[in-house]
Length: 64
Length: 254
Image (tube, helix red, strand yellow):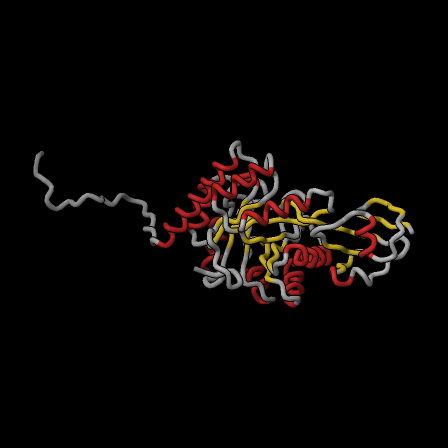
């Protein structure tokens, strides 16, 4: 399935958002959104991905 | 002392974490200043996020995540939700940018986003202008803190409109007020506190100084001086001199 992860097109095996994070080695303290909507940690396992989904995985960063 | 959503700040300096020459210098700036709050953001995970987070957590300060760079209500609200989960705090510095060059907040979107987030249980710290009516609207939708700009973000111009900031202090006597953005020098920060503001939020003035740790310390001292001066009830300025040495008892020598 083709998705866009953090702006980059990716071919992935994962069928859920939780599996995608494992497949792409994104662990630790991150927050996720799919197609511009927030998906809380507790719902990642049940969130099925679809072809063309835009996934954002954000982490803590410097800010003012 | 006015509390921020029930929390008294250990130190009225809110310090940003961006633009430092190195993580070590960022840490030194926090230690040197004793800043009570660190502002942080969320960006696409590139591998550096986890190290940054563990360093910030070790500072032992309060965390204020921002929605920097957001231009729409939806974007700001979604970012706030993501920040709440990552940082584990209901505090959010709500930034909704309306103008690319001045980074002036879009105050109409700001009020709307603040309303939505307050209903969702957030404790919103709105980055706003010094407009009194916008301030009123923000309080009406549930904000308990206001953060008017001193000058555009990163400009270092200080308090562009001291009159407006003074009016704001007078209009909202019970609301914690923070001058957020535009501070360039310790004297600017001291002035904000002399006006009776409760805290100052700054980043660039420290991070981009030749010696960030020393500048952070200078800011903290200025803020403390300004706060003490405000509490000490300063005299009114006057146009003509008023002799301070007593006239009575002066010798007749001419």
